[in-house]
Length: 634
Image 1: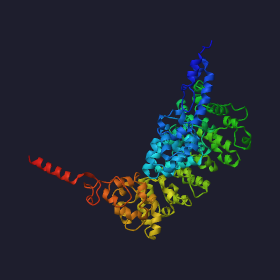
Image 2: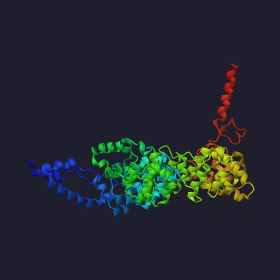
Image 3: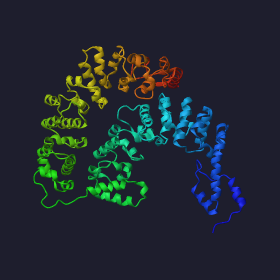
Image 4: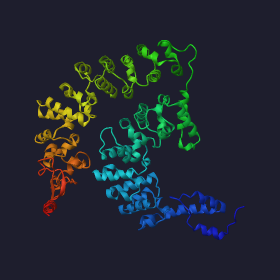
């Protein structure tokens, strides 16, 4: 029986404020209470009155001097037309009030408010705005390390999904965020990924492939599906096993839990290698959890697992030879009937028959099962075009000692540009034979020397000048400082008889191993080094350069120091310079040694001219010395 409510209470309720969440959303518990009390009609009346009041109170929103004192219901229903008519100061106050009251706005409201405020935006005021408004600001408004760092620290806290995946504005944010962190190329760190916030879910495939160890755990928590490029890179990384999750053959139930969204990228080749007991146990415990945690993923995994369930080879179907009949086998029959040892002895037949890619992948799986520790060299030598199905992780298991094996597989490539597979193959051969002799170099002729960074410093010592002449900048990108220290003096001698412009062009990729003496000499040759080359110089060498020497090295590119003042090696160089010398550059560089301090470097005779160690002010140091002498006389 419903409670009869007197009319007075009904009338009194109509003038009362309803219990609301943000933006006029009635709380669930309050709605139940009203229904039980029979106040539904009063609620309808109140809703109509509120809608009318919103229209009547628009002038209040536009003219109210203290917006923070308004009820949240008045702050969340503004239109873009109203915002465009506000002064910048009033719009800022509106944004501040919205943040203070933690009001959730619609996407169109966030967009128009950000667009209006960006006309007179002061970067230091970013912290007064709702964080979900920040993705709508143009990142080009925040130039310089400090401004961009502040902006993207806010973006990291924002819901970037207010911008749709693939939107140009969202791609622009990602590129600007990476540039702000000084990321170049495809390598990112865990700190880089964390600083990106939700933008990390947009990292492209080439970054996922190169930095899978730090990117994949973040992608696992991303809402929504990955694009095709991301899926392919994530799948390849998971299959290779060089990720925090390890090889699929060693996954556990907790590993599958940790994969979360990445479960959607698993294909049959990965599913087959997961221990069956692990998959079944995971499916069992997942089926007992709320369905919302694993939307569609369980269905995907069950379907893939069902398609690869172990079946018995039918009588008379086990092949004794690799021939055309296998082409007409069903995939499950190939899995159940074909023996890896048979394939290993008849690789010439495997390559001669036009099997489908899916069938060839099954053959590779059978070979991997037969030789889990790596293929024998007799099989490697006969791989032929089947080498295309190998990945670097497979090749890492091989023991390649024969030059004939190396030649045979490189011949299959027939291209001047090596990919990671060929580089890994050469590295395995050199680790097995330990020789970089004339025969080996002849075998490598015709290829760009992408493999240089796969050689040990000892092997690099015997590299001929012809390889240095053929080296391109990208061929040395992955070389360590120890390798460049070996390569630089060899390159310096190889290029010393060419013109200065050609020398500078050729020596540039090797400067990561330059000595301080050679860098001093370069500083007197008006080289006009660009900032990307300067950043490759060894930190320990750059630290010892004077302001004048850096000025001579960079020439017209000197202004680039400001953008790099927080990045290595510019940051370390600034720490070693007197602030008054830095001030003379007029670039606004900060972080040098304060004026009036004595600098000592006990490892250098140039300590008092260049200096690297800050001890104390001259007066204080003199006082300490006097006290020490006095102490010895007591």
